[in-house]
Image (cartoon, rainbow, N blue to C red; front, side, top):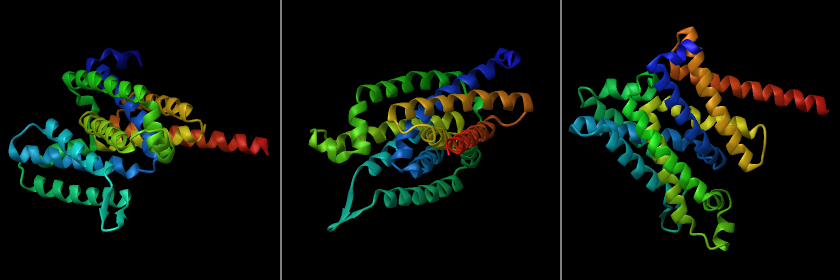
Length: 273
């Protein structure tokens, strides 16, 4: 372990995985409890389409991935009606996922360098994270955490009890838009660091694992972040000693932690009986 920490690129990769693991595991609690897990995959595809568009036009991929992600989350946060019927949010997310996937493929097909670049974003290579990219997420992500800390009550009521929020005078639409904006930033920036697969894993598995332990929302956030950090640290360590790709190793490590928690929970239930 000491040898791993002596290598500069491993230090950068480990720090990046810990930061992304922390922020995505935190946001993942909202995503899992709101039952909008598909949002993570949809925004990842929309962000990827933005990258493909930028590469085709010779523009900055990082900026356009964020712009596309923000446009996507704005659509998710707005209620769409056709006549007197409201289109379910799940349908909007599903449509966005399908269209952005097709759009990404079409744009990549017209870009000479698009295919290799987009594939690297899907599968990720956290060992190749530039230091300036690490500095950027280290500056932006604490700001997002601060927003969630300051407006915890508003986000909580808007996400899980919108009727109560309205009775308290909370403008749910405004807070829903702000919530999706922060999630869009988290996902689009995390994809550039670890890829879509790793980002999606952080958004789903740690929060799901935390919910197996407790129903108290504050503790769910705490345990989710802990599981995300453990997955990052041990996943990076195992990938180093076994010589495996870091991203997929972190994904499998996160899944193993979830399985261990399930087994422990089942044993406790059997003892109680």
